[in-house]
Image (cartoon, rainbow, N blue to C red; front, top):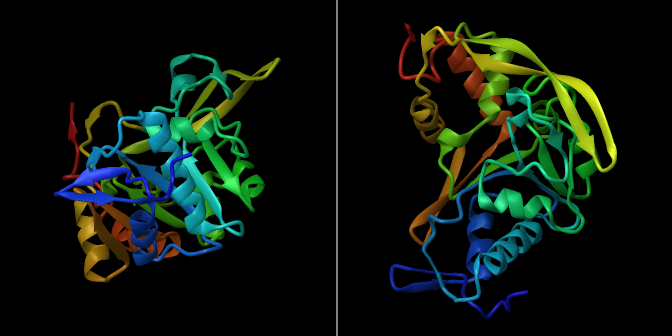
Length: 270
């Protein structure tokens, strides 16, 4: 474990300590008892401030996020794999997360559990982790992690990651039945320790006959104007946070006005 007196990053001629990150999380509204879903890119904040390797940095960042929500809070990270869609086995222990180094590190830590959802799997730590790990077979519909975050009044944190990485918007797209995506059922194998079984999962996929270019910048600007996104600079990066309740309400409202609001424009046929 890294001492609190050991800097984690160096950026713009300054050192960044764990206490600086805790303070930054506080500035975007993260407090004890919160449930947070964290999208991350830990490379953007600056250069490593010590020569001890990536594992120690990742461990320190996980501890910072745990401290931010405390024992009464819950820390959740996506550990999406998509391997199930390619006919590969989803192995709860061995299938690597494809959404960032911090998420892959986090899922392997003591006290952290990963769920059985073979496409949009998540890993969780904290008081209410059992509730958030018990998701259904619909990746972005009823009883999905996104549905549970909405019901649980969680917060989404963009820890160095851009707002463009917001997968919660798939839940909004599905509830509104956008014309450029459709539901598809995938069937395959899931492995948990020594147990291996066939199962199926529903996933909201793009229409392959359309050229779909995602662009969430309009929504981000809308949320900024309404002061619903909180943001703070950290080194050469940024931390953002938004309440899921606010995000769902505003994203739904804008999508009702324009079904292609999350895209650059109406898709062209291929």
